[in-house]
Image (cartoon, rainbow, N blue to C red; front, side):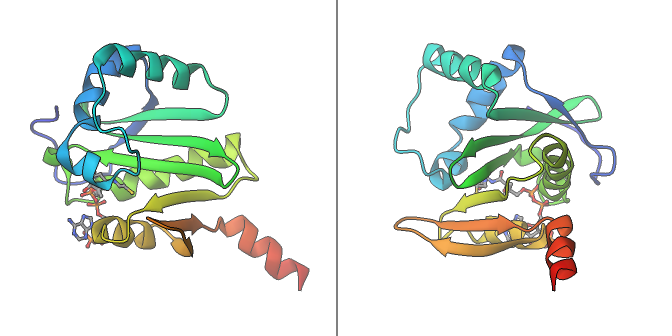
Length: 170
Ligand SMILES: CC(C)(COP(=O)(O)OP(=O)(O)OC[C@H]1O[C@@H](n2cnc3c(N)ncnc32)[C@H](O)[C@@H]1OP(=O)(O)O)[C@@H](O)C(=O)NCCC(=O)NCCS
């Protein structure tokens, strides 16, 4: 996990995840705050099961996982999955790298990356109603509450290009 990393997120990079990230991704996946904020019902996962899942995501044309790197350290991850609702984004930042704009910076990079690959899909986040930190994070990143479902809220980012397009139409 991340140890000593700089106090800002200016020099943060995203690279695509690979199988060599499996152990770290699993260790983040099973952190209590990751499980608490996750919508998945399955809370336990075996390493072999996790590896199979990661292989399937890496091979899928409808998913992408990025590892955030800062000062040579892996400090977080973001994943997008194409679904009927849009492009669903999830994020996890290592505890050692929190509270200094890391997640905001990752979300900005995800936006840039997805604009090229999936230009017409809305970015959405599924957030539990009590996850105030995430609601603030996504609000600051330009997401707005789109709808509420049984156990979570759907937040959507409106790409600036879409807004411009709409205003051109009027
Ligand atoms: C939520 C999470 C990604 C935030 O990571 P982070 O790098 O600390 O976030 P940032 O420093 O970029 O914060 C950006 C904004 O989010 C909000 N925020 C982040 N953490 C917060 C917290 N603990 N309490 C309140 N607001 C918080 C703030 O508005 C913050 O802006 P500010 O610092 O100017 O006030 C991180 O805490 C995490 O990985 N949590 C566990 C997994 C999770 O909940 N993922 C999201 C599921 S939808």
